[in-house]
Length: 137
Image 1 (spheres, rainbow, N blue to C red):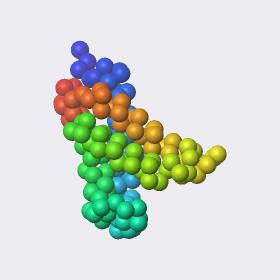
Image 2: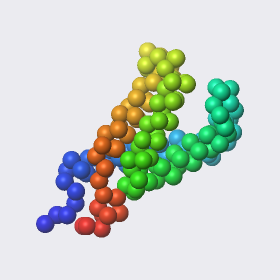
Image 3: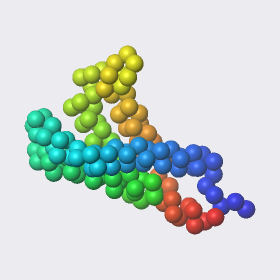
């Protein structure tokens, strides 16, 4: 008998891995291209308290949290954290530019809304960690 997760659970696993990849790339890019200090400066201009700590927290959270999402560890807490981060991104950055990221607009909120929706779905349907599902085979 096949001990792999049922097809809908495999689809959810694939979707969770995709979200982890997208979020991880965002954090790693910022880390490797000196973006956290720049992000901190921008947050300071927005009046965010402890802006450099917040910038580093978001950057390192995206890196560590995306790995945890991929492995199925602490999925719900990290999904909720990312939902909060991207909701604030909508408020501070993307909503003033409208809906569209490209095409009919630029830098809008559609991508962030998609990430938030995907993270909410994943958070509602947490399953066993990836390593545990793989060890059942």
